[in-house]
Length: 104
Image (cartoon, rainbow, N blue to C red; front, side, top):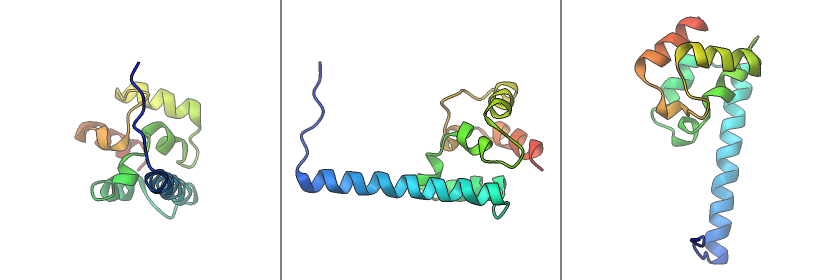
């Protein structure tokens, strides 16, 4: 079985800092969606230039929308044809359009 790469202490610290930053940015984005300060269209637009937001799971994004929980998010993903593990960067134009129509 392959071993993970050996990292120096400095490389490990940098990787941990990068992961913490990604979690912070994604949590902020979901909070802005919950409060209505940001729309789904703005998230899609931001994801085009921000890799951290582009890495947000679609299920998590939909669950953060007001009035949408985990069950409704899963059903919506199934109806639109989005895989459970899909991230924003992996959505097609038609899938984005259907989600925007659903939440407009």
